[in-house]
Image (cartoon, rainbow, N blue to C red; front, side, top):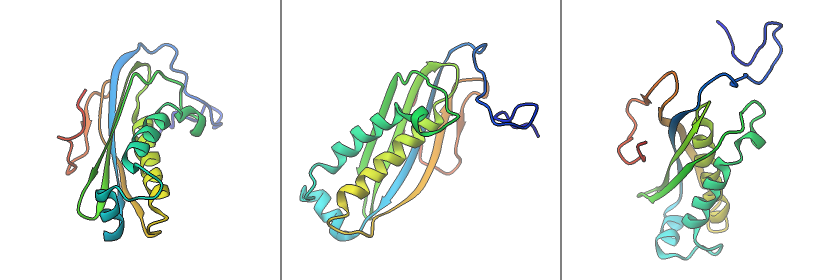
Length: 165
């Protein structure tokens, strides 16, 4: 098995994508933040002391999608041409769904995952004063399209609500 981030000497390197042609690519991810009934009630009623949790988490997720090369040492700097972060209040959790788009030489799966994870972290940060038991679960890529490997969807995951490219 060949590992793309190891050179012929077995040393870590950043894969050279210079010769690849830019193509339209997108990726979607999701995460859940499990919360107590007390937190869910505060979210529904707009009574979280730190303010509008969903708005702040949405902006945090979009900002995070643009910062992936600063966080992941082997990630390429690419143009994030679109980023959407959707947060939905469910019975016992906040569902976060993200979609990131580019027209570049490499995919945006890490950008979609980072957007979902930072949005989830933001929810936890903003509700911890109400209840510290919030927990992040189910952080996964749900769909990707474009590039050499084409389109892929995670079986068993709800992708109809994710923004399709």
